[in-house]
Length: 276
Length: 276
Image 1 (cartoon, rainbow over the protein chains, first blue to last red):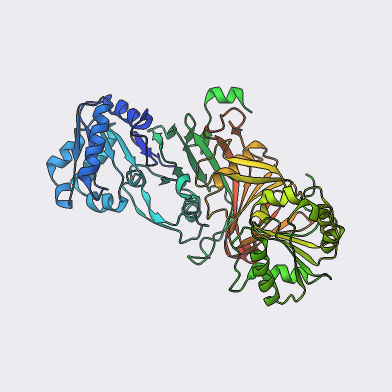
Image 2: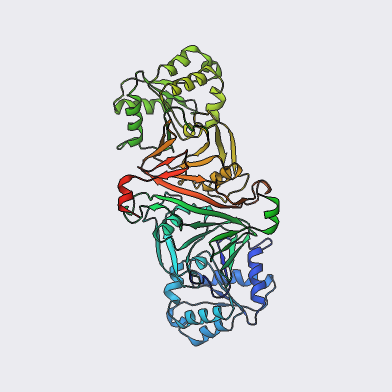
């Protein structure tokens, strides 16, 4: 298995707490604060970037980071500017807001900003994303699909993402929008890929050791199709119900983790002692 | 493992097709037609039984069964009448409509009608139920719970059902209402129990050989916690997210089945040849 991640990623399932303890955003500020350079808000996914950047500027400043800037990229031309790229390479942390994941990939893909992002990431800059900004992290990303629905081969639409994390496909707002069906549909198509469904106000921290750790108030659902015994995904029509047997599912709250190399859920030490 | 079923059950996930091919209701009429006696509609779950019985009387007659009656049971007194009990024991098939599962158990539990139902069932009368009428079939039934939500220990409320099927807990309107979380919460509490989540317009036929077969247009999700490696269900607070690792999930469309004895999904022969 290729390494899943090269640097540190914080992938958030959307609707993260912005008024209370702000567990997830606070963790981002803490991690970004370990490095020099400002915290950069990327609003490329947002239809109304000003509104979104105002909101996050306020929150991150409140959480203690005085050095926060917003990089609004309204066109591919802007994404080719060396000044934009430099903003990324000199960032302490980069935060992708929500919106539409296709706006991110179509605006940034292959540009100077894209290259700068990968460069910064490999050098240890933490890259975070919420909602659409979460989906976009993986090599193959979920563009859209059915919700609260039985899985069909056609219940999910996928495409190339920003490729910061490999061997996984990420879904967000997961339990809250009934997205198991579409994630299973993705995993059935290529069981080497692990399905990671992140609930709202919940996030995963993925490090370069192929380990993932869960933070936030809800859970992360990992769908592992490697031991799948049978699926009809290649024979079924797009709207014909999917059959798939023996997939492994883990439901992981705060403190739990996952070892991508060994495809093994990680249970907190204190819980191992208490529970069976 | 105790036998799961003693006779034949048709358990429907609600919202079954009533205007098109009526695959599921037609199968019920066909199976009930193999035995003497009328087809009996049980409206005990319904708040407005007349409306519901009128609808099903019309459908079942259209599907070819001329001998259809409705047994409305407005009180436990009615459920104790020997005439009510006789209607059940002389039925060719019994069909429980939707509504509220607690209405069924609180009206019928321990009465003559309850006894008659078990007697008829053991003698081979097919017992069917949709929605609330599906939930009620199991020894422990789901009364209610959260939808489109992360699983918590407290995200499901359960109680004693009619006990026609053992070792399983049944959920209905499954994918359509995002009920994976609550079914996982049920299975985490007692992994010996198999979670069976039935989608709308989908049903399982369970026979006395411990086999289940799927019919209808959507899928059945089987949640098997037997190989679960860890859960925090007994330590977590009711509203604290559930952790559970390594549960096995099968998603089964029409033609697929499940062997309860061996906890094994059954794939149609023709698909075995085509697929891996």
